[in-house]
Length: 319
Image (cartoon, rainbow, N blue to C red; front, side, top):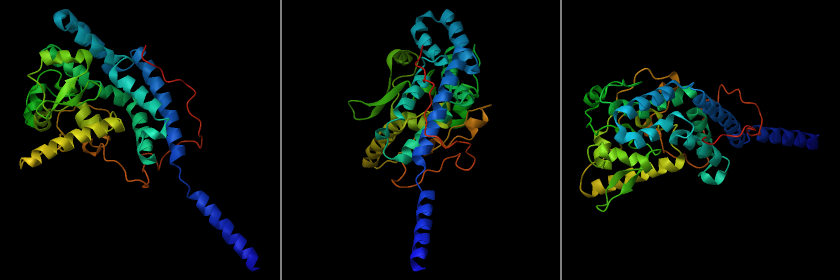
């Protein structure tokens, strides 16, 4: 009788342990599969002109190319954001490919969070909102001839946020798809544009220092709404390091320095439901503690099947 009781208790314990197993690897695989499918769908929609702001971006740049021929190389580069060759789409593809290697992440929590973020970032409605930044850059370059989209006017936003007008292109400062923070000879960080985007230096009001930008920046979709979805863990770490270095420099002078994301700027209009429910920009880069459970936004209402298979549809490269 005692032996039978022991066997029953042992079986019960084993079943309990199985039921409490770590489901994060399965969820990562599931998000990865869905993210791959969604990225493919997004690429086809961009190719077929089904993303509204992508279509407008192509139209806006075409108009401005005729009016400002000296900026043709820059405008052609901005027009790529309406295609699968743009920095934001190619970033999604790269992040998706990196998702398959656990060594790219500090732990399973971070890998799972990244898997969900990629899946969300490839949502057509969210991606359409994200394109409002380059689209409104072109609108600002037209000096009012072309209307802004999903954003109040440049002047109204500056007034509402007590922001400095840094010139056309300022919405892209801080977005790792277009440049990065570099350290100058004085030890302070400044914004360095990638490639053809360096032409913004000709239309902006002087070099953009991190300390100046942090306190005086205006609204942008990436910095105030989409940063949680469109920033990889490595990029978030780099952003955090720039902030911590600058804060340390200010502290050594007895000055206070706040994160550029501590305060959300005002300026968005008519964003999708997906954007209005996105995590706050200030939450990006807060790494989870090892061993803690990641709480997915979809953990309660998930329709995922118990499958470890990854997408069989190849995520496209930019054409």
